[in-house]
Image 1 (cartoon, rainbow, N blue to C red):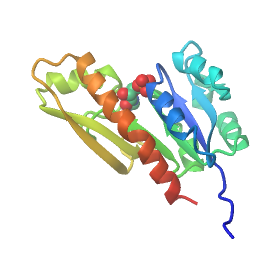
Image 2: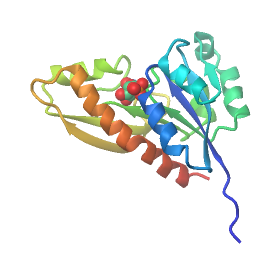
Image 3: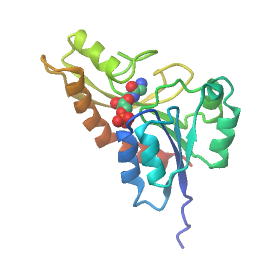
Image 4: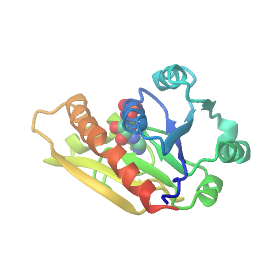
Length: 196
Ligand code: GAR
């Protein structure tokens, strides 16, 4: 007899538009074994907050107090029985206390080929501006585990795309977003299947 599989619960952390959140939501919606238990956002007016509310995903707004003392945020994640935390365009650094409570259970997506173009201040269009300014002919995405250091956790996956000589940061961002949407949900699914 097949034992029923345990439902796995994701927490999604996002700060802005949330195109990755939408893709992850669309990918897992048909899957009865995976649920999005909570969306955490640091900007009450972000488009991703409206999306989550429309989808009946509980929203937890994160404040600067949570950064300094994340104990209540951690308790909220535990109350939601979160198995895996997914950073999808989340622009604050995850507090060390939270990394300690969720070891190897926090994934991030970065819009460049780490270890280059990562670290503090390297997010969103700043990354693409730096890549173009350096004359790179190639960029890409990195999906990695989160540790105590910005963008330095173990790399799970990378994919590449060209940078054209006349690219604007917006054009490169669009190409990177396509890669993210194509790969992030699949990598999450694969990682979920590897954890108990
Ligand atoms: C994505 O490109 C993601 O890689 C990046 O923010 C964007 C969010 O887009 N994250 C970082 O720069 C983290 N350092 P989205 O809100 O449309 O998903």
